[in-house]
Structures are given as structure tokens and as C-alpha cells.
Length: 52
Image (tube, rainbow, N blue to C red; front, side, top):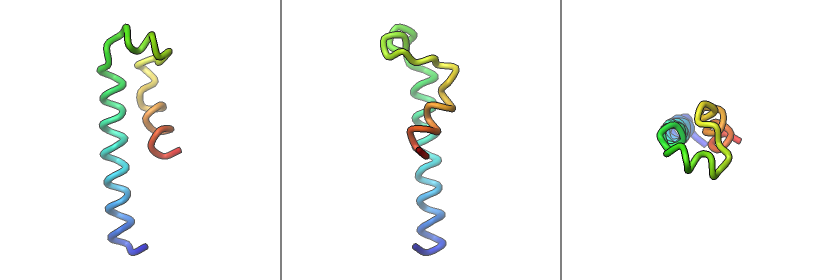
């Protein structure tokens, strides 16, 4: 993997992380409760989903 490919992959993962975090933070409360998700944990959940 070249440096450029690595940078592209890092940027793509960051975009997915930001989008996932935003979706969790803005989901309706009833949906979050149904999924047993605490919206204040959005950063932690998104990080785990994207980066493992």
C-alpha cells in the first residue's frame, strides 16, 4: 500500500466515523431506546464500528 492509498483510506474512515457519530447523536430518542443505545456514547460507538 502506498502512502497516498493509506492517506485516502484514513480520510475515508474518518468520514464514515463522522457520519456514524452524527447519525447516532441525532437519532430519535425512541429509536435509541429501542436499540439500547445511549446517544451520549456516540463517539465511542462510532469509533468501535469504524476502527474495530
